[in-house]
Length: 220
Image (cartoon, rainbow, N blue to C red; front, side):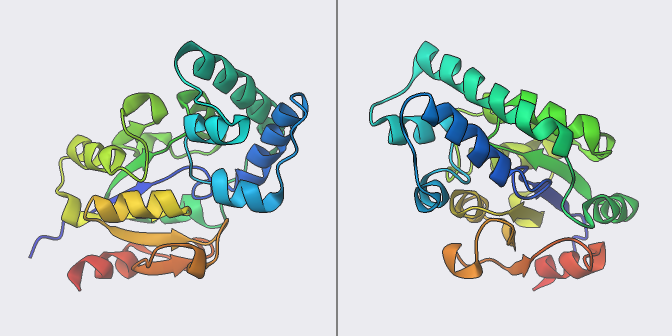
């Protein structure tokens, strides 16, 4: 029986509970443009979505190319400024990642966020050395729910998709993991079970999680 496994983490809402701070940054960004999206609109059209989708949706026109880069820089700069003093991993995460590493699991991160955001988090949460694959929005042509970021992560880690477990918190992210043929653990920081596609397991945090618990997902 193949015992090799890989665990791939999304970042926002999975490594750190960043979504409230993204909401604050987007509110500030949109308020300068006389827009005031509701919490419900944010939940539906922001969490787990790429900036090109979010900006195009709320600004009601296609945002692409140089304009996208410019607006993205503005919004993500706001996010980092707001979030920088508040960076904190989801409870139990660092211990869980150490436990995975000590059991020989391969570990990666696959986020739809830009590298600068990932850098901010990896500068504060001591997990960078454990990652055999690091992927951000700049690394893919197709964003989640397309499986590209997860399939490429598996390739980077030298492991087949059916031996991978993905940790995700958003509809598009869970869909991306399932579309890649991987097992998915739903992290309920931003959404309820009913708001996500069916996952193989659900968690609120990592406090009771071990390598043994999750490796069983691959043996069923």
